Image (cartoon, rainbow, N blue to C red; front, side, top):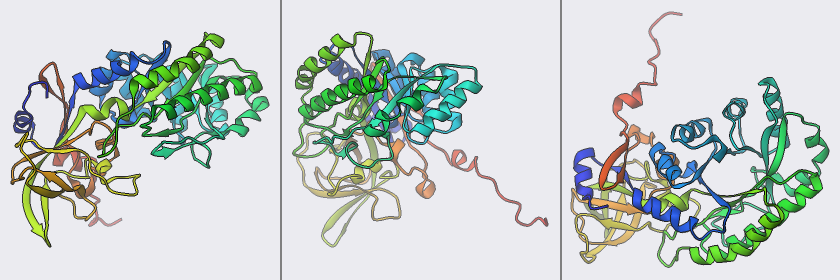
Length: 420
């Protein structure tokens, strides 16, 4: 990675670990930014990878931040993201979350229900602030195609149904400490066909125009989501970025001509970080069971739950390499499992690999998104792994590995022998 042998990183920091390539992060961001129509701002969804250094690096490339918790908001701010380039969304915001948004002065709070809008109005009034900018998250009446997880056209805990928003004009107009400045819609995730994203964008922009007219509010910001996919599996092809840029040009340009003061946002998480990351785990044992060869590794789904195939009907393998035998031909199939006491701890199943021996390093590729952030790191008390960012040919430790003391420090031994 950038000329740094992964074995050297393993020797210095131990295994397992996640390692991120800053050059791939930069190339991915700029490759997309350069083809998108003028005026489309890219926000990084921290849920995909909330590492503060990853966020900071993407911020330096020009990305804003989409956050969904108070800690993600703190992360974005400490990473150097300008508050005016941050939006906060999520269906379960607490009063403390809303207070943090008000105090920070972010670009907008994305409200997902009318009760949330009312609570935000109360929080802003108590703080003597306002009007606080709000985007209404809309669950559109139309559905999308080509998504690994569709968000529109069906009952969801996210956002408000389009007809509910359309009928809320009087209620919204009576609130004095918030200002509806636009709309947010997110149609799905893992889109690999660029035309599906183009169609969604055009329909969301049109919906925003109609809703703004019906509610009598100005359009200052529209977030049309994103959901660009990554080709993890065999027989998948990555999204055509050039085609995406060409297809979006007309709908975005026409919208901006009609609404020159409106900020247009695209939010992305997986797409920006997945290709940059590799999960590195070490083979501990190699054994056979009823004709199947198993590699027991020191890390597994406790760190990389996405590799289980959550959200897929069929378990498919992430790309995997034996890092100790680069370029060697496969000598058989191996099922790679982790250290957990569950049969579900299977990272890849019957993958074709060069010979795997105890001590070999295995690299699960395209692992820069939804690794530690979406995994049961406390299962069996193994804790979370180290994270390393390779930047300009230097491996930089950007998250220390959990130690036993880290895991035990928050716990308290109850005085069970004391008499009440």
